[in-house]
Amino acid sequence: MKKTLLLLLLAIVSLGTARGANTVTIVFSGTTATVTIDQNISNYVTLESGTSSHVRLTQAATFAGIDPTVDNTDGEITYALSGTSSDGEFRLEGAYKCTVELNGVTLTNPSGPAINLQNGKRNSVSAKKGTTSTLQDGTNADYNGALHCKGHLKLKGKGTLNIVGNSRHAIYAKEYCEVKNLTLNITAAVKDGIHCREYFLMESGTVSISGTGDDGIQVEQDTSTGSIATGETTDHEDENSGNFYMTGGTLAITGYGDKTIKADGSITFTGGTHNFGDMLTYAGISDVTATAATSRQADGIYDLQGRRLNAVPQRRSIYIVVENGRARKFFAR
Image (cartoon, rainbow, N blue to C red; front, side):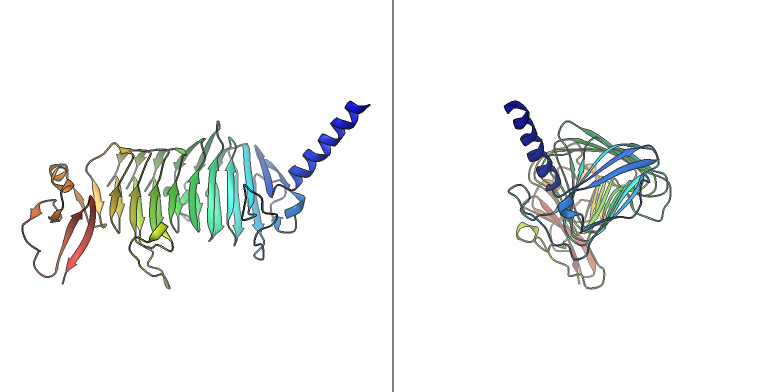
């Protein structure tokens, strides 16, 4: 009798914890998907797609966090994806930060992004440890990536994420993109492997990019109406520099069509390892060729062919300044 009561009590505790976990669980199975919304957030998340494998969810515009915990201090909602579909998608609209947790999901959308985050805030995509997830889009060019994000994109987790971009880029973020811990394999993309704005930061993890029609990684400065250009900022707060940063991890880029890395700002390596030493586009204007690979390590002024200059260029010319291992674009007026 005591054992029965104990098991019943544990079941009640488990149910209460699960229903208060700020989680929406999505399990794909062929052309259908099962969506379970935790009770404590049911007033904030609306399922628009029924049982279809093309899952469309809306996170209420009024949502600003609920039931914060030690592990989730902002009280954000986690969307946990698992299962398999060769004709499915995950689309989320919202106006508050969120996390998309990949639990070994395999998802192909023949007519759009496999994951489409229409949320202008911070979006974390986390691959759960010990799992491998695969995303692939179709050949419709009306969107920008197999993993498409309207806002800030943080790629993390200790699992593996494989992506193929059959339309444009494999990964697209309208704002900044950061990578930490994740093992990311981009095996093909019609255009760029990763394309983002504001800045790109790789802190750790392993990123392998191959088979891109254009660049491995491209970083643009946001020039849309109302955007303010900046240089590097403290902790990258409100940064819109177009800079590329690598502070740790392993980055391999092969089989690219144009450049390994292209950036409107500067390209900076302060840690980690990478497998390339040429075909970088500093400040989005020119690659530094293999011939100039050794000279660009030293501080100085260079022309667009990587040749070191003895004086500041004449007026109305573009040149590259290398200082403390960082390359920047300048225009002499």
